[in-house]
Length: 250
Image (tube, rainbow, N blue to C red):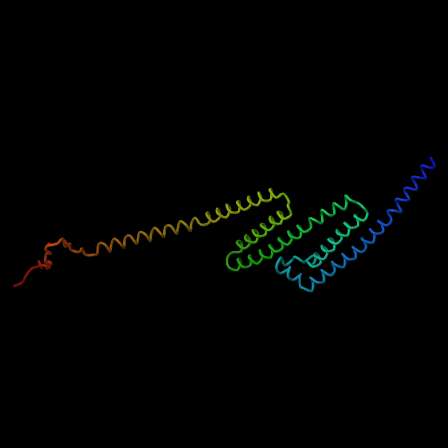
């Protein structure tokens, strides 16, 4: 019994001693990865601040986009956490935590899709604001707002499709939204232009009636031309001089 306990104890000590190098390497990987992630996030934040990234975001996306937190700080934090995910993946591999390492790797493989989706939405918001400004300067404000909402809605559906979130549901919902918007626009234009169409039709009818009356008057005022036969050998009668049938004075 004592010998068996001694063997168990020796086996445990051996496993702990064998695990120490992995633990030490994991600690080193985590510390170095944390430092590099902080450094990368700070460099990105400073670089974007020098490039006037925050004023650009405020001007193109929304005036209050950076009211609570500058956009450069948000991007820097995203870079930091991305570096930390890579660090955690390497750390769990060093500790031979296969399941945890696989889960982190799946998250990392999904990150590019998130970046592309965010890029799509950001570009769409900037384009929507420009289009809304252009339309608002020419036509009504509600039309500019409608164009802005339409562009942003389209970008959201594109981002969801990029993320692979229930693609069938997303596409069906997008088709339904587009169809409903088209029907609503048609009804709005149709109902709003009833009076315009009625008045325009009446003007066309009056114009046609005036033209018909004018043509009838021209036809009545035009003198009748005498008819002369054109067969060979036919005699053309001399023109008839007008006769004065009034009273004569001698």
